[in-house]
Length: 330
Image 1 (tube, rainbow, N blue to C red):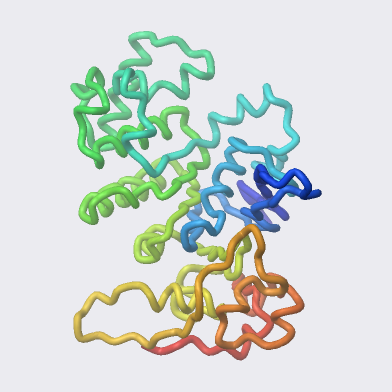
Image 2: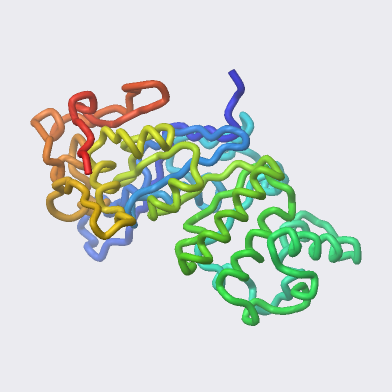
């Protein structure tokens, strides 16, 4: 069996908050990521989805080593990035790049487009030679812009064009993995489709792998090969996208899919009952984090956290009753 390009094992990230109460022995802690494990193969796209605040963007930062992990391992081609020496991690950054959510805030307004696109290479010690600037023009054409754009600045472009510049920067060092952190959520729907098609074309051309982080299930369905659904810092369901979309076995996944707008005004979809609001990550419920909102919850759910277990080929669900919960028809 081929080893995965990326393997995340038992990843944990807790943020200790400052407390105004001097008599408090322990500072309150946000459990942003609470024991997450998944793999990503070469040339594959894994869609990581969930509501805002579930911890999916934190996972992206942990994979990139932008923030330190509290516990767990992040292995890229077998090397654990958590404990890797700083010099080796710097060299590996050519292999792992990122496309950010905000196409304006992620671009330096003082730099020309060519300087922005070549920034990952300059950070690795390469010089801004004429040949390298010519390479920047090649990259711009590759993402649907022109060589004439190389001397301009970010404020002269639309949101979709800025995101194309961000993608050109990400592919400049010829990486193997790109983290797409809500990469199209700030764009208009028509522009979203263009950028997604660009990402998929680049994947075919360059053999890229994507960790595609998003909350729009319709978008993620179009681009992902496999899906991982997060709730309050934990993955609750993962599997091939067709399986998860057509036969979801976790009540939270069913509720998410039921909330996706239908394409025809006369089409109806069955509602999945979900009570209350998302609990605070400062004090997540014991047992299954979803049990206060779950219509199927029983005593075992309140006392024991269900493991992420395989219920079918490559389909894993963190629910005590996954085999008996039938997907709603709509």
